[in-house]
Image (cartoon, rainbow, N blue to C red; front, side, top):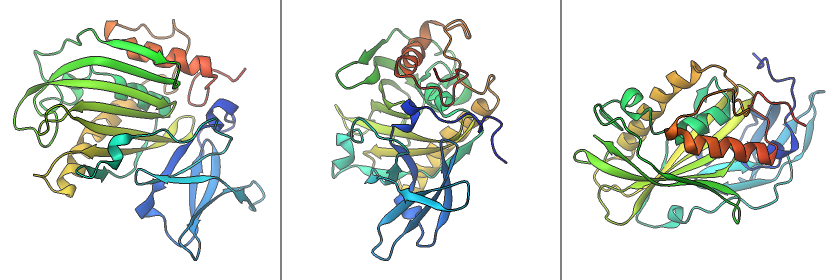
Amino acid sequence: MPSIHAQRPAEKASLDQWYVIDALTDIPAAPRANRLLGRDLQVERDAAGTVIVREKLADGSLGDTLPTRERYGYVWTTLGTPERELFDIPEADEADRNQVVCGAVAVKASGLRIVENFLDMAHFPFVHTDILGAEPNTEVRHYTTEIRRDVDEVWATNCEFFQPQAALSASGGIMTQYMYRVAAPFQVLLYKTCPVAANRWDVICLFVQPLDHDRCRAHPVMFIIDEGNSLTSMIHFQQLIFLQDRIILENQRPRLLPLEPRAEIPTRADISSVAYRRWLKEKGVTFGTAEKAA
């Protein structure tokens, strides 16, 4: 069923971004329906194996072939004209890392709500109990947030939180160091302490595909150092974490993200969320928000 917000079209700021639409391993040869920013797509591979993405128009015909990129285990496309190429993740090219594509998860929530939840550490002890947090260690310590104008990204650094099991490779509770990076409005990365490799980060990415204002698919992928666990067990661990989040996200109200500062009262732990919302507003992003495009 179409979203109740589907009639409000995506604005230019959201159209001019790169989005994941599927894992490379999930693209069939036969045409298959997909969706992005309230528009229907058709995705297939041609005889040479090249991924072809086209918009399905209202009259049932197909539009021109859309630009695509194949990076980080996924197919990316855009409905607009991005000002820059797809952001770089240097760790994805390191030979000793596992690339763990964790499968797409459908969520009845704004894609921006999902990014904001990913930035939130305060929920760890209560939603991911005995994994990413546990009482009495509930305090979010002071951390630093900035909008890096030279790369047009939001970063949160000097984050730390005690975690009973920071990763599947962890053998016990550790004080985990974090850095968050919002590389695009619907794309967020987490750099965190690697339990088995000193002075290196595990990298966990969440690539959000907004289907409509209040529906999306989340595509988690990890670039991690772990020689002791199977690929299947690593996928299951990350899926458990995200499915715990989905319960909260789908019950959050309002479902669309408010950008008006007085709409929701932030706490000290929410400074990354405050910066993220301010950045979205500066960029003119309204898809998935309670705001209307100017």
